[in-house]
Image (cartoon, rainbow, N blue to C red):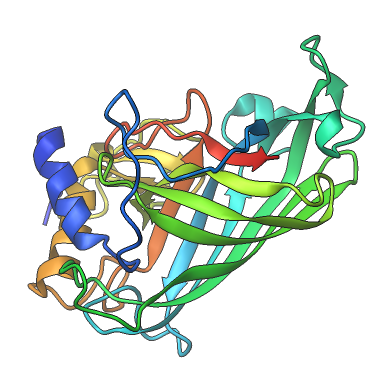
Length: 292
């Protein structure tokens, strides 16, 4: 069946909010003056942030299902991909603008005080939690947010190792999550992790290129029009229609098999940073931030 539908943003957000409630209900998030839902960063302020595009999986321990109506242990692994041709040329998957006073070394001087630019050679996460697609607040008291490790390797051969968890979903932007954690080792050791990233269900598409690239329809694939999708990263793409097609069955139980053949949602794209908004909904995100 061709996925040609481009649903209005408000309807998309509503369905996605229902279908992607994979984390338990956390304490009420404060509301900024702009009306955006944010999570408390305490008295700390940002000492820099990183922009990257990633693709990851959400699978049960046996790798027989993704995020579905079945509450079970899920593991999410992701890695970074080049965002544009500039990243490809520099052999990187992202960039960080961080302060040397927060424990970051080397890098390229920015001309803005002690901020330096550091190119990201590798980015990866591995998180585990207990979740399902149940969108009824308080229905699952034994759910646990995705929690685990994040690693950032820089082209200058330095590294940041951190422990992070999903702090909660942004109720103003259905496809954005807030992060918290701490840098345990390497660059920025001792800094608190903050910030937020967007996430979209993605599909493997051979013709997908760098972030934001259009895709040509492969006429040999009968009944499927790839041109309705936009690239998230090389080999992976999404659309507003596909996002609804994945989220709605997850939240209502009206479907049992995801686009890649497993029950539930099993592949996601994620990202953040200026100029790299959610492909499906256009949602902006700050990326991974370092706080002190």
